[in-house]
Amino acid sequence: MVQMKRFFEDSGTNEFNQYQSLGISPIQIHRSKAEHKHAIFILGKEIASVMSEDEFSGPGRTSVRMQQLAERTITEMAR
Image (cartoon, rainbow, N blue to C red; front, side, top):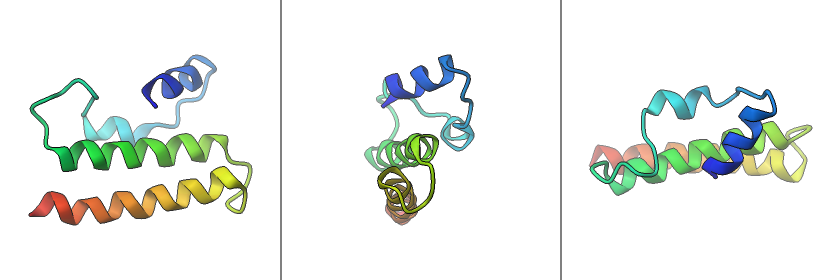
């Protein structure tokens, strides 16, 4: 997913603000599993959003679902 993010950034798309604001990368082993899971869902949502043409397309629905999963992981991180 990070490679896809880099591809879109190299193509001039810089719409990964929410993922970047988390300050987490795949190599940070000191972060919790829940934090990594949350970051994956946020990145997935943003990639799908970049790829989607509207919210009813396949990637558009994926973006919405990734947002729902990201919200769910917030409660896991609070435990």
